[in-house]
Image (cartoon, rainbow, N blue to C red; front, side, top):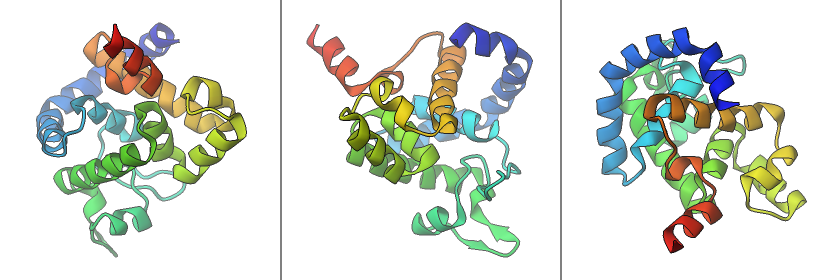
Length: 180
């Protein structure tokens, strides 16, 4: 799946990589400030291809594809033509806060990424219905879009890094790795 996705999207990912040269250092510094893995910056690639002008079919805007209500909850100004969701720095700070809060709730980066896409309620329902906190076990209880979202994040992470990290593993996998 990883190789197929990355091979099929190689040209687009090369263009995004060039765009990333401009934005990734700033995102890294913000994630470091919030004590988050810097690899979470690849979520903005999944969300918007790092485009500030991106708008989803449901009204999410900017590089981090934040909904207006979520953006306001995270202290971004969204009024008429003035929309801080399009500001790379301010929206990255908001995304960092949101990711930190989701990690405090779920403690598993794959579940955090799923919740970022579909909302924490859908992930909590999937946990309840599956009886598991493992993304790979509960994924079929999530919307197809969310399952694909998490898998695209993993594929893009591998494209940019060449390997996985704490953000591409379940909590159990991280604990098992640390115990070895």
